[in-house]
Amino acid sequence: MENIIDKLNNDPSNTSTMVQLPFPPEYSFDINQIITKIHYNKNVDGFCLNDSSLPNSYNPTSLKPPTALGILTLLRFYGIKTEGKATVIIGKGPLVGLPLIQYLQSYPYYATVTACDIFTENIKEMTKNADIVIAACG
Image (cartoon, rainbow, N blue to C red; front, top):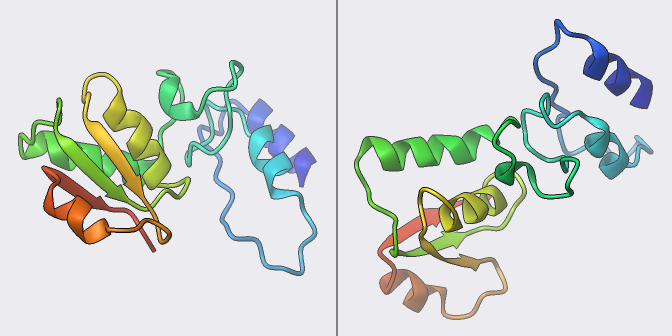
């Protein structure tokens, strides 16, 4: 599998690579090893780490997770201001929740983000008091 990733990384006609997850249990691949092998400029899901070991969402030249970008696009399209807004994100998964947390905490969004998951107590109260609620859970 790793030799396929290497080939895709070095192929200039390939503009992006995605590994469909989850892998079926009968495969014995180390998924982290495979995903981190994808070059950050070709990793369409944004799972890998770039050379400075920061998540892709902090690297302006890397591809970004498409669902997270879709949500940000909707916020911009409808003129929803995020700066200083109490924002609750329900779900901390690597495809949507985690990238949204990173994006919304930084330029140009500057939201005050609270991340919740199935272990979070008082989600009802948190969402009642939030300016923005984003459900990013499966």
